[in-house]
Image (cartoon, rainbow, N blue to C red; front, side):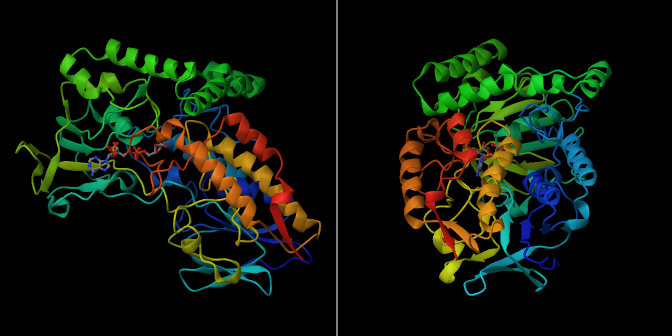
Length: 490
Ligand code: NA7
C-alpha cells in the first residue's frame, strides 16, 4: 500500500469505474500518491457489470467521453456498453494508472481517526492502510433491486437480474419473460425482439419514450475525427447535445413551461405516429408527466414492441411458478427464461462498506433519513472525504463523465487547502450543509421528479434526490467551492 511521501498527501480512491479512473488520472498527472481499490478483477464499473443485449449509453458517444481524451473510434452516435468498456480499458493504459489499481480489493470499512486526522481503509480481507484523503467513486446504480414476487425462487429456468446477465440462458427461439420497462428493459426489448420465439414484456407502468436520431459513423468520418479533433468538439458542444441538456434541465425545473410541453408533445406524437394498434397504443400511453421517471431515449423501441413475437402484459403479476408467470386474473405465461429489469437500490452509494467519520459519526447514522452530500460531494463530519456522483447530484439525462469532471475541479480546490498546508482536514460545516439541504429539498419538490410517479429518483420520503436546479446552476456551483461553507481543521 502507498507510503506517505514526505509532506505529500495519500489518497485512497474507492472504485475503478468511470469516476475512479478520472480521479486516478488527475492525481497521477499531479504526481500524487494514490491507491485505487476495486472489488472486482476489472475496471469499468457499470460498463463492466452490465452485459445485457442492447446495452447502450443514452448520452451521445462523443459527449460520454473524458474531455481530455476524445475518441475518434466511436462506431455510432450512441455507443454500446462493450465499446465504452474498450474505451476505458484504453484510457487506463494510456494514462498509466492500471498499476495503481488494487483488483479484488473490496473496501469494507473507512474510519476517521480524530487524533491523527487520517482515514484507515479496511479491506474485506482484513488488510488495512492509512490515507489522508478518500475519494469515493463507487457508483450509483450497482446494487440490483430484486422484485418481491411470490414463487420467484421456484422458476425452473434461468431467472436473473439484468446486471447479472446469464449468457447460458435461452434467448434465441425461446419464450422469454421480461419484467421492467425502464431504460434497461426497453433496450433489451429492442435487442431481442427479433431473436425470441415469444417475449412477454411485463409492464407495471408505461414509459415516456423520446425519439432520438441514431446513425453510425463511417470509416471516412472516423478518419476525419482522427485528423481534426475540432470535429469531435463540434458534436460535443452541439446544440443537439448541450443545447438539449440545457433545455431538458429548464424543463424539469419549470414543469409547466414551454420546454416541458415540447418534450411531452414530441413524445406523444411519436407514440401516435409509431404505434399502429390502438389497443397497444393505449397500453403504452403514460399516465403521469414526462420525465417524472427517467425519460427513455430510444429510436427503436416502438418498432420492436410491435414485432409479432412481443406482447405487452399490463396485468398484475400474482406469482412466478416453475413453468412461467401467473397473472392475478389467472392468465399463465409459459416461459423458458425470466429476465428481471427491475432496477437498482439507488440509496446505497458506498454502502455496505461502513464509514465512520469524526467523533464516531457513522454514514448510516448521518444518512438515516436520506443519503445527502454538500453539493453532492462533501459531508459534514466526514473530513477529507469526497464523493464523485454522490447523492443529490445531477443524474438526469446528461453525461455523468461531464458531471464527474466538474466535481473533480471542485474537489481539487478543496484539496488545495491541504496541499498548501493551511490545515490537515476540510469538511463542510453543519450549518452550511443544513442550508443547502433545506434549499435543495424545497426546490426538488417542485421539479418534474416530484410531480407524482414512482422512480429511483425518490428517497424514502418521496423527495426527489436528484439535483433540482439547472445545468448552468450546477456548472456555476462547481467552478469554485464557497470556502466560507467549509471548516478547516488545523
Ligand atoms: P428502472 O428505471 O428503475 O426501472 C425498473 C423497472 O422495473 C420499472 O419499469 C419498474 O416499474 C419495474 N419494476 C420494478 N419492480 C417491479 C415489480 N415488482 N413488478 C413489476 N415491475 C417492476 O431501472 P433500469 O435498470 O431500467 O434503469 C436504471 C437506470 O440505468 C436508468 O434510469 C438509466 O439511468 C440507466 P415501475 O415504473 O416502478 O412501475
